[in-house]
Length: 85
Length: 237
Image 1: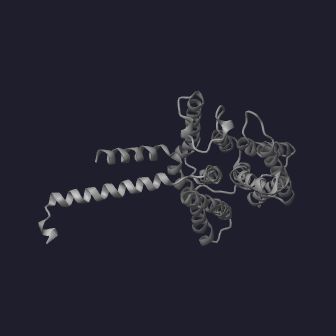
Image 2: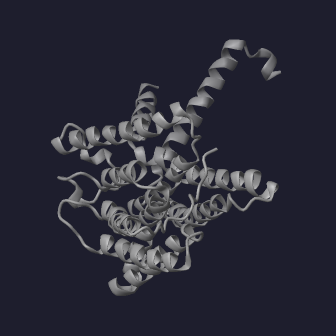
Image 3: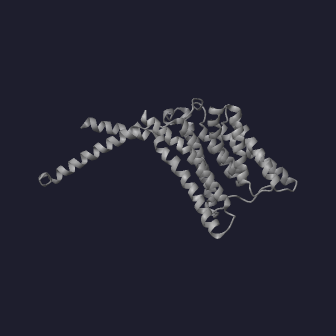
């Protein structure tokens, strides 16, 4: 029982030290969230009022979304491959 | 029959045991995941583009103060962390994805942060936005292309991508300004990326080189009575 507890504590300590595992979800979720917010902002202030003033929000939203998704796919794929190994 | 004979205490013990087993298995699975440092660095770059959210923050007095103070505090914290890491107070191994040459000098994330801070505080958003996009996307695209296509083609692709970012963000400018800014900005970004300096990282240079070139051009033309700057691209909430 004590051995099991030690292994668990060791695993928790290891996990806490692996900052990359904590960062990974943030690196994926935050840019997608930000890009969706840009798109939502364009829809609410620009599209629904018929104003082209907010087209910049649309452009930046799309750039953020496409750019990040492109790299996220490779990043997630690399995680899976290493997991298999 | 089994459940009726089981006391509450036994049920609690059994649940606890199952939970512990599940937790141990979950922790082991998590620890088994390996993160590829190469793609981790690339995704870190693209993540930085979300800092453009800064320009959506409302234009109120107290928020304007926060817009100055908060980025400065974040960068100062990064400076302290890097100082302690280089001195050896913090274990180098804890900084995932650092390159070998970053062991004894500030890591590239600090240069990136300082570059973004300077752009936020000292440059108009029309210049800052495409420069941040170049650092976030052009840099990793050049890095990947260099690996598959060689240096020359990678820089050519980098030039086209950077020019695209300047075209998109300056689309409201006059035609001549649009072309001039795209060519000058893209040239600055590629030079900033290609010129490897000993003490200054390319993550800083890819932002600052086009920004300074455009600032000089803008101010020079302004002195002649021509304002080439288009209206702001992003509007505070």
